[in-house]
Length: 380
Image (cartoon, rainbow, N blue to C red):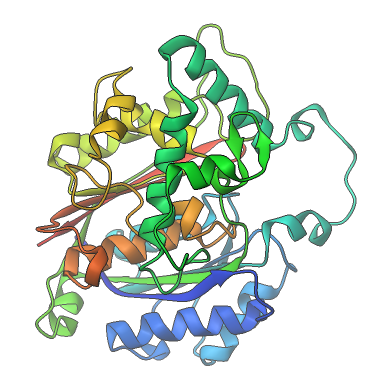
């Protein structure tokens, strides 16, 4: 990647179905990241701002709330991978030498309101298949081919709800432990997925600041350094038998390809990871990504769930902040929420959600269209 790049600050505005404006959420998350890094906005050399819904000028307009410094401001939009893509651009700016520090910030209102923000559209084949139906197809196919049960999907969703209980920025903060039975008893959305298996779709904002090693050392203040050791992005590739299934996440093989590129860049393997974040809009995704990321052999993801391996305290915790299901998925900022949690985990700042001895974290996001982004962060 060129120069070494470190995460020096992260910030969040709580995700949820609230009435806080997108501009106020943007400001809260950005200021939190600046304060976490002990930087002022005048120290930031470039800003990459991401959102899906909203107006053309929102990114540069909202940035003015931090100050008028003349820095470059670039709007990034890449569907659910918007925040991850903005983070990657910030990483590349520092790695490439154009900036000593760079900031990625993303925000969005509720996913359900985004279509209206873009105005009316003519219907096309790729917009007729809603995500709930697409992932239901994946799930039923998995049940047919592997014998996966609805109870397995419910266990994954319950795990993520329970991880979110202890994340103050999560959309879903249940007042008691959620059981698989509770998940299965919620209303059906698209068989086999119930409402509690579907991702939260409230509003939110997230931010991260990256910098060179020299800057990171100056700002560390006794905290461990968090280094970005891999940043990979791929768009959809043609494969024999390829069928366009709608602009949801594209072929599942995209995750395997992008992850393998990230492992190669970082010089690590899946067995080295301490925790993982994925695009878990529905539990079938998390289940499939266990295998596509190489955490276990193909067909053995169900066993990981049965063993509790992907729960905090297990061998390889997934979605330690609640993931898309528990923490929520506003769209644009979701990938940066993953970076927030991985950074906190590697610093040892996650409280009751802390993964003991966390040293290496992977953040994976899919974007409709279809793209895949994978980052690997390391405690130095």
